[in-house]
Length: 122
Ligand code: FES
Image 1 (cartoon, rainbow, N blue to C red):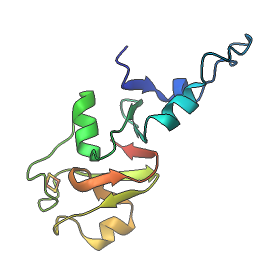
Image 2: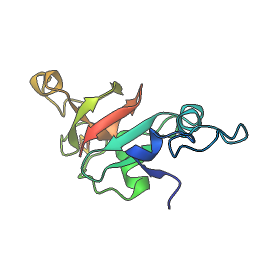
Image 3: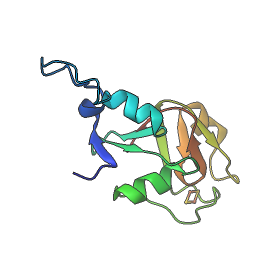
């Protein structure tokens, strides 16, 4: 399994979920995730991907092989728009999204970096 792609259920399951003893040498998956950056969950594929410190949502998707439309990659065309269902991002766009779309939870993935763990409708 690609270590960047973990099904969401795996991230939420610690080593005791199978009913076995806790191995103190093996950290819970949640603590591993916390130590290695934010996560981005893509609802269509059901995959959760670890995010690098300065990666955009689009870069995270591309690195994981998750298809995502894009064009300008600087926040001006709007082609990469997707809706954030959970979490917060820092979006620095150049006019490619309307305020009413932002108010509905949409972001431009090419210029949005996670501030928290994010669930993306994509
Ligand atoms: S690719 Fe154009 S706004 Fe994101």
